[in-house]
Amino acid sequence: MQGLGFSSSVNAEGFEFLSTIPAPETSWNWRRDYMRNVDHWVQIIGDVRAMKFEDQSLLSDITFHDGEIWNAFIREQACMHTNTVVFYTSEPSAGTTHVTLADKLGKPLEEVVGWVPFPVGRNGYASSGFTQPQIDSVSFSPDLDEEDLALIFDLHLYMIGDGFVKQKNIVYDKTKDLREIYNFDKITPVLKGTLDGMPGSPDEAWGKQFMDTVRAVTQYPLIPQTAWFFPPEEQVGPTTNAIDDAFSKWWFEPGEVDIAADLERAQNVLNTQAESFTSSVPDEEFVSAANKYYAAHEKFWQQHSPEFYENVFRPFYEEAIKSALSG
Image (tube, rainbow, N blue to C red):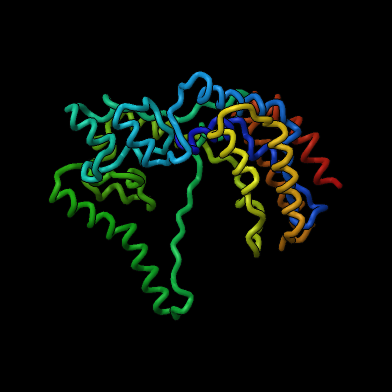
């Protein structure tokens, strides 16, 4: 596993969500609290360490990233790896990929490898089981006048709409391979109706079994995001280096470690660092946004994961969040 794979086991428990607490009495409006659920975090992190250092059932080293784990999978050194659907849908011309492995064996891709979403966490949290948002930004020069800005934006819209369709049809005319058309993230074009003008379909390119799995996952709603409720900050906030360093230590350093002490140390560093930042969001506006944000989470988890709601979210909401926002 690459670092993302290790972290998924902790993310599936809601680590970031349950350890980030609103703190309108502070200058930055947020604080970290890893100690509230410290026994749970110690168990989860310890179990992953045991898989790697005791059972030796995980292949990894600190240099493993997407490319390395992908190549290990193709070489049959790893039987699973953690990644999004786009790693399943690489075009045949991309080099050594899952597709070239399937071609080598003379089988459809879905008979060689499969893709499944992560299971929910032990506490019923489902961060990885639900659809997650990804935003790719496009920026234009601030020196453009209104006419030039309109022209360049129209060109951008064309290249993700009609131009995209035209380009893909030309590629198909040359290759006659639908895997070259619906590759990487192109299985889900941005603009509605774009697929109507393209040759074939994602099902024909990658197999109905795979696409049915993708469609099943996309039926889950998005978990409420902070960006939907809180105004953007005018300055970049505190870094996450302290907790990132702790995770790097846990995932890649064998031997005895005191996970609870590491968590407490990271918490203190992050909170101390946050004291030197000042939020641009007024306290009253922050509290109003926070109340709406957590109310949305309450409704979401009641409907989509009652187990997590009853056993984890409700006490967290009552004990940690409401008290923080009422002071």
